[in-house]
Image (cartoon, rainbow, N blue to C red; front, side, top):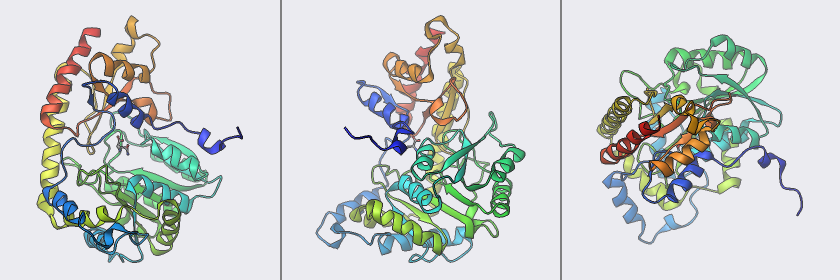
Length: 393
Ligand code: GLN
């Protein structure tokens, strides 16, 4: 067989998605690995989807950079948040999920050999995004337990000639919500060292009080160098629909449109039209979404605390990092990797998690990630199962 592409040899498959497959193969297991809800999208969205099943032009190719209706909904929602009029023709690109949004953004700005700053821990896609776009990551630690970065270390990374920085806000997996001051500092460095800021804001509506989500692109002077990537997956509980988007200045958006056109042509037409219904929901919907995730966070984190499993409490997103050091010190688990622990855990107690090592550039082996985007009954059941872990301590 001829040689396969070296680039793809540079990363593994997604461990998050691998854990979902392992969970699916384990009868009765509760999947707290890959983060997606087990509850339905809003009724209005399901009804709109049904309407789209009637005949019509929506079943053919949509405009490659997104249906007119959906781009208008996106521009209308984000113009006030960004404090400027977003042009739905020129500054919005609808993509196949946040995943394609990030990939298309990276392919639009990186030349082979460029350097890209990635905070560690990081959502595992960014490593592959960097490699596929020919860039080399420079990792800057977010230091637990507060997951703050050292400003001097960040500046040093920019000084090395970074072309861009990726900011996941709120952060997957550590749940950090970047403050306005932190984002202002990052944008100032990006300006000083002439770099792009690429944001991933898919958890923007899951930010717990008293924390507040700030769009980096809304900061004074930041819009021209900021590429905002987002998705409707988490906001409207439609992770299977694969609808994301990029908001960027005209010249950047033109480039993203080209990449997107040749990668996928477009996100599914009927789904783009159907999701427009969700934009009529207004603020009450987002308030209730947050209230629901706040209840889940309280239930899940209190449960972990009562069991005695040390864990992080996210400021935003629905991820919790659990410290498994106490297990790894036991004879039974000695020398195990966190991946081995997760593979064992799903079989032993029926709960799937993601090994923390898949999120860190540093050699971290003592953390696993769980998510709480589950019904309260399912979270109670998962906690009951996790309690059994104590028998191994
Ligand atoms: N962002 C979610 C996670 O980290 C889902 C990722 C995905 O598989 N697209 O689990």
